[in-house]
Length: 73
Image 1 (cartoon, one colour):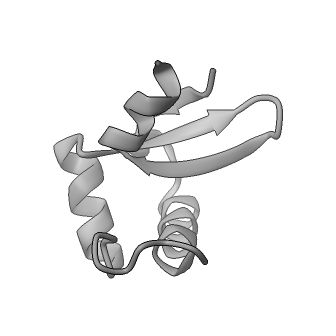
Image 2: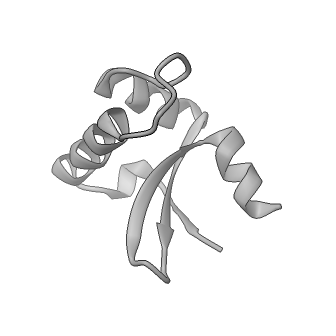
């Protein structure tokens, strides 16, 4: 199961890079997806999005809270 990483624990450069990747990710449903770094940062601050770290793939990801709950089920 992926670990959650508080966004406050990441350096500003790392956080911005992760958010940029999330905003520009291929396959994202554009009608529902946040479209700016500011929108994603706001979602993280509100707890509506989370940053996860997958130990198996050694990768970080941003997930909307609803999507993150699916992985826990």
